[in-house]
Every structure is written in C-alpha cells, then in structure tokens.
Amino acid sequence: MLKDYDIYLDDQKYNHSFDDLTPERMTKRKKWAYSYMDVLCNIKSTINFETATILDIGCKELFTTDYFEEKYNNSITGIDLYSKIFEYAKQNNKTIIDLDAHKLLDVFNAEIFDLIIGLHSFEHMYDIQLVIKNCYTALKRGGYLFCVVPLPSRNIRKGHWADIHDEEHFLERFRNEGFISEFIKVNHNTIRPEKDIMGLFKKE
Image 1 (cartoon, helix red, strand yellow):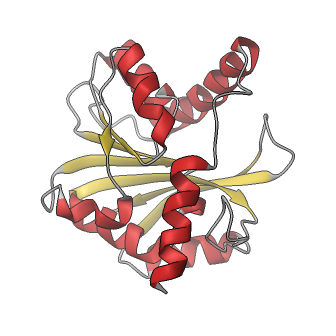
Image 2: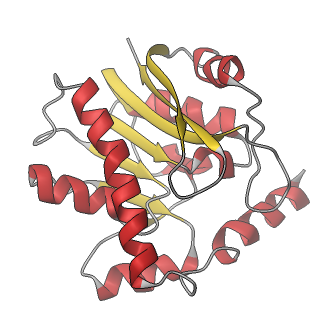
C-alpha cells in the first residue's frame, strides 16, 4: 500500500508537463475552465463569490485563480503537487501551497472554507474517499464542493487513480461522506474525447 502511494506521489509530481501547452492550447484550456466556473456561479448565485473563502484542489494552470480574481476580485487558495507549477506560479506572481489533498487537514482547520473546487483533479487522487471526507471536514456548514471528473474514470495507476463508473457511482462517492447533491450534469468535454460529469454538493 505504501509503495503504491509512493508511485502515486511521483506520478502527480512529475507525470504532467507544460511543455506541450502552446499559447493556443493554453487559451483553449482557459476558456474550458472558465466555462465550468460560469456554470458554478450561475447555479449558485446565492454564494457571495467576492467574500467567500475558496479552495482550488489541483490548481495547475491557475485558471480558477484567474477567474475569481478577474470576476470577483477574490484571491482564492490553490493547492497542487505538480513540481513545475510552482515555477510557473512564481513567474506569474501567484501563490500556490505545495500540499497533497489527502493531507488537507494537516494544514487547514475544520470548517474554514465556503467553497472547494476540484476541476479534473479528483480522478487523480489515490484515495478519493479520503479526499472527499477531508473536503467535508474543511467546509463550513452550508458550504459547497464543486467537482468535475471524466466519465467514466478508470484507475490505470498512471495519471488517473480513481474509478468512477457512471453517474450513480459518482453520486455515491459524495453521499457516502455526508454530502447532499444539489446539481449534476453529464457534459461533452470540449478539449478531450471523453464525457465528464460535474456535481455541486452541499454540507448541511
């Protein structure tokens, strides 16, 4: 088990690369990320996005950070493990915390965030249930978790580590940790061939 986790950590730190992300591809990916944030903000307009404490799990290119700064003048918190992202963030005057989401509660107190976002990051988690449980603990009462993952997602022990078979399996993973589902949608991914599923979950 520990050996598998070490493999996972190496994979998350070094497997992905910015090397093939041309300006054109970065623009396309940013548009893609912004489209999901628009969905979130439209379906949950009751959240005050200007003052909400927001955590982005797996922030990589920092598109979510850019979105909330541009739209709401809100500086959110981002965490990631990918080694090159820290150099990228420094070059762009951004701050990212080097943190494994499995160890979220080692750094953050319980009931500290109003909103947690996982945009194509939860499928990369070694123990997705632990990460969802950590999110539940870190959210304030009445807080929300917004998650988007490929559908289906398969544990191939390289890049993707979480199995999510279908919509019901996706819902089950969050309900098992106490979340109430408020919004679910299967979507055609605009930058990848597979579909993905987005969900908004509430901690009551």
